[in-house]
Length: 223
Image (cartoon, rainbow, N blue to C red; front, side, top):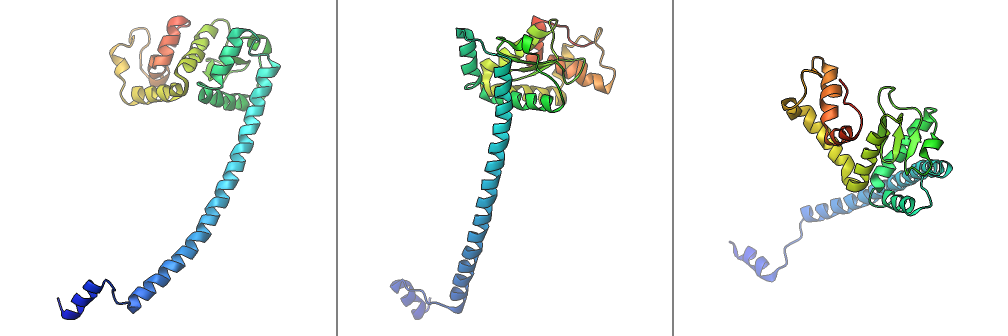
C-alpha cells in the first residue's frame, strides 16, 4: 500500500472520480425511469382490480339471483347453517360453482327451481354432457333422482374440506393420470381399458377419491 492510499483509508474519505460522478448520474436516470414504470404498473393494477371487481359482481349477482329465485336455502336451522358454511369455510367452492352456473346460463341452460327449492344446492336442468351429471360447489347440472344422492356427496365433501377440496381432487386426477396405481385393483374383466379414451373415462375418473366415495353411495361407475 502506498502512503497516499493509506491516508485515504485512515481518513475514510475516498476520492471522487469521473467514474463515480457518472455512476451517480446513471442511478438518478434509472430512478426517474423506474418511477415512470411504477406509475404504469400502478395504473395497470388499478384497471385489473376494477375489471376483476366488475366480473366478481356480475357472477355474484347471477348466483345471488339464482339462490333467491329458486329459494335454495330454507329458513330452518339447516338452511341457515349450510348458507353460512357455503359462504365462509367453503367459499372457494361456492365461487367456482357460481362461475360454473354463470357459464350454464350463458349457454341458455335453465334453473331447476322445483328441485333446488330448500335443497341447499342449485340444480340446473341441462348438464355438460347428456351422459353425466356434474357438480361444482353447490351447483349441480344434469342430475336426476337416479344420481342425485351421488352428486350430493360431492357437495358434502366440498363443505367438509372447504378450500382443500378442489386442490385435492385435481391433485388426485393428476396423480392417477401419470401414475395409474388404480390398475392394480381395477376390474379389468367387466371394465377393460382397451382404448385411450377409456383410460380416462373408465379408469382415472371413477377411481379418483371423491368419485370412488360417491359411487359407493349411489350409481354404478362407467363400464
